[in-house]
Amino acid sequence: MRALLTKAPSRGLFAFCLLVAAWVSAAPARALVPQGQSVASAHPEATAAGIAILESGGNAFDAAVAVSAVLAVVEPYSSGLGGGGFWLLHRASDGFEVMVDGRERAPLQARRDMYLDADGEPIPRASIDGPLAAGIPGEPAALVHIARHYGRLPLSLVLAPAIRLAREGFLVDERYRRFAERRLEALRASPAAAQLFLKDGEVPPLGYRVVQQDLAETLTRIAGAGRAGFYAGEVADRLVAAVQAAGGIWSSKDLSAYRVVEREPVMGRFQGYRVVSAPPPSSGGVVLIEMLNMLDALQATQKPSAQQVHLMAEVMRRAYEDRARYLGDADFVQVPVERLTDPGYARERAADLDPERATPSRPFKPDVPKGADTTHFSIIDNEGNRVAATLSINYLFGSGFVAPGTGILLNDEMDDFSIKPGVPNVYGLVGNEANAIAPGKRMLSSMTPTFVENEGQVGVLGTPGGSRIISMVLIGVLQAVAGAPVDHWVGKARFHHQYLPDEIQFEPGAFTSKTRVYLEALGHKLHELDEPYGNMQAVHWNRENGRLSAASDPRGVGAAWVSK
Image (tube, rainbow, N blue to C red):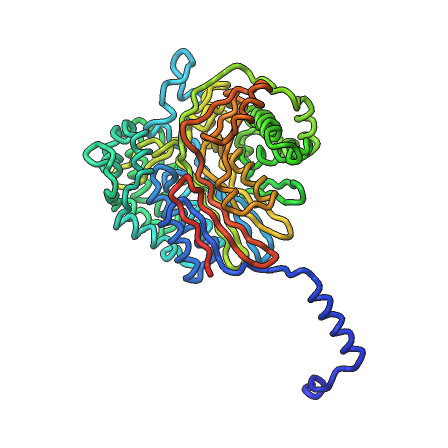
């Protein structure tokens, strides 16, 4: 065999080799894996934790667990172990994609009318403040699940950065102070929360160190015992006792019965790109793909910029109406996902859209509060594994309630249910029976972690922002498809329509005076917001040359990193 290998090739074989070499050199270069690794998150400490795990030999899934846990420590106003989220995963070795559903569930004692008074009207703030507003957390179970089934490093190593930060503390910045001011009364109402997140009952000064020893201990228990470190034993007992003592309805069975669900993502196509996003109980992917399908049918991206805004607003209006009408937890109600994401349905839905006139929604104008709660991060590793994850405790600082001895700040995700048909939640979103409260049910969400890709590029993106999440991701996807650099995805000026209230909400300076006049002439009501919104985190992989790029929203304080 050695002699054969040392023989000179025949002329025919030599010519064939030259032909193959010429064909390979003429074919376009294609990077099978990225040249490096990348993390973009809403906080520098979380990005640093993701980097450390990747450089320690972990993959994107290990890094996702580390980033999630650190965000739970340093962004108590956005996410935490007392909340939940959706982790969209792509495994490079076999192309497997899944959404890990760590969404909160309604307690088993929850009732359809639990937030209504004797006259059937919503009790003010009952679904927002205090432990009665809290669903059963899913994030701890999701982190353990991802580490066990997709990561390669020990959970104790992956959680180490979060444990250290909880013990040593993090410094209060202006963003923290602004959000704590908005939830000051709710935090004061919980002695354990006030002790952790306030100073002498007031918003802490800049540079104040927030130390969370109880949270460090809870994280340590999870690192050692897995899900039992949270959903059983001492932590579970303290959570249930604290919630019940403060008027909540959690039980030990609620915690022991909680399970992560793996769900098949929703998928659509737009102008040659494949778009993968979150399925129910998130409304995000369905609404996003429905909007893209309508825009495709209308050939909206070929229109002048002002007309594009009109068409996008009308598309948003219709998709958000469908959100209110049809979407909920698919484990409890029938959600017509295939129909809503079908291009034919989109053509039907857009058939009554007037290119020269706004279509009125019902005249109802709930008050939509500001908020940048919820968080997002995006990761691609050097194997091509990727994660888009959006996490939340709902409103700023969740319910404002901390269970003593645990360090766990509870969510107020019960407000994401339809408390009463047609009555808006804290973000002004209305719902129907599909999203009504039921024991053990997952509440509808707007979180939209998303992949967008074709043969030449891969994008990983998502954002917080309550009801405006889906429209922000829509704008980001359109930027990606247009070939804009990744910092444009996260930095592009934003606008939003959600059917009710019947208005286009937009960031300061998003529209020129000429565009405003045009939109108003078509019958749109315009509402310029007081401040920018959202906090998108995105990573881009150019498959032609293997290069990665990443960007963190300039509206936030996050950080994006690409390895050399």
